Length: 291
Image (tube, rainbow, N blue to C red; front, top):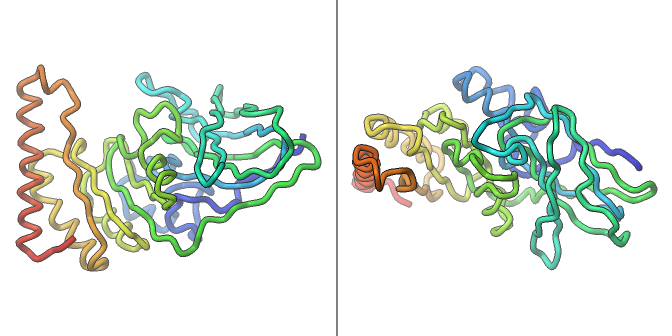
């Protein structure tokens, strides 16, 4: 078996790819370390939304990876937190192959074997709630390996949100909604989901407004209260609009998915927040902020 490092391969879903990073697949580069809260900076080490494409004619694919923290939670499977997903492209569609199941900080998993030795395009999705210290692929001796770089001309869909955006609690990396949308649309999605910390912050607005976007999706409702929504939403949208004059911005309601059908106070709070979001939207329209 031949082992090949993927640390220097071009990845999709990585903002500011040419900027210096502490680790190759950190979502935020070093230039923003002092511009965001420590909690946000630490979460930016999680590689949610980032993937790597390559082609090979190997008869098997074995994934070797080392995570940064070996993080675990009692309400989300380790395959989603720190596992890898392997997909294959067939007839211009991506199909799930299997998951690299994590066992410890350093991991090795043969995801597929006994294939006919012909060239195929593959995609690896990186962990949702941990970072990557090292990433390698094991292939059959003598097989070829080619990096597939992302398109340099495709504008990105940018998501700013909460743990749900980051991928909680998807069972595996390819099943998070930003990765699903990226596969289905063949568009790059940049994931600025920060678990517990999607708080409509202007410094995040300053960062995402620098990116070449085709659409902004703001889905922070689970991490904010009604007053935060009143205080921070319009300044955030104005900040983005100052730079991106016409790029569409989508504001996502808080879904009524909790125990709101039983807990009266939870239901009241959710309804009030969603009503407030609608009110802020109307104010934005009255300010002639379009799209």
